[in-house]
Image 1 (tube, rainbow, N blue to C red):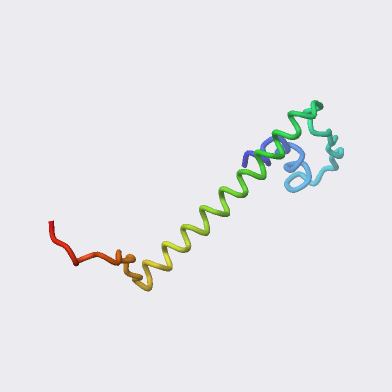
Image 2: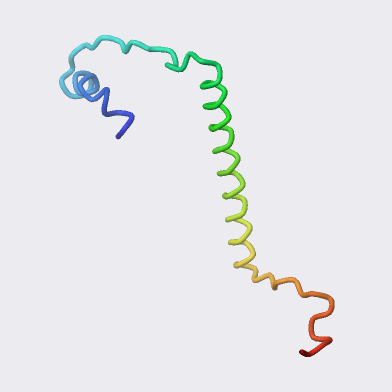
Length: 82
């Protein structure tokens, strides 16, 4: 809804009222400074990587829960008592 809201009048004209509309004026990305563009790109890449790693971890934990993999035991577990 957030993406459609600025174009709601145009969409209503086309889809509901059957009226012609003017094309949207496309503007370039407003950041003209190189460091802003690089920071935006790095942020996007970082968010995609974080999502990919988090999704992979979540699927791994879910699969382990389904097949009930036991936790790894230490080699000296049970040999000594405190």
